Figure 1 (tube, one colour):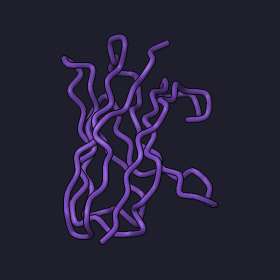
Figure 2 (tube, one colour):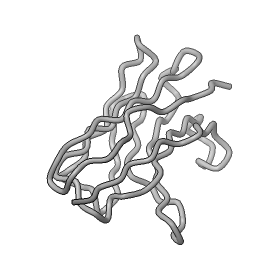
Figure 3 (cartoon, rainbow, N blue to C red):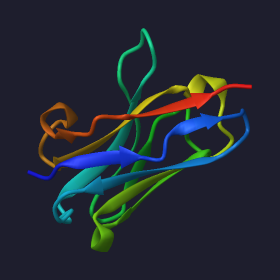
Length: 119
């Protein structure tokens, strides 16, 4: 099973952009679904976006049109481009790798990277 590690979090102002990266320890095979999830204080973890090996994407309602997920299987890396960030995007962002037949909770999770949007 692959291991994943996130990077790229930080503190930004509302309206700014940030790109998160998720590096997998092994090959991201085309049957892996790669996803980004986030958890804000006092809230449950929620899907931000995920992408299949075939490039099909799925976004959470609150980020649709602002965030873009992409994957570079040759580099074993998944990206989350976040534009027009809002204060409510503040959360710990987690990368997830799973075989398509599994639910996310049974996949591999990274340690998370903090994204803080504040003026």
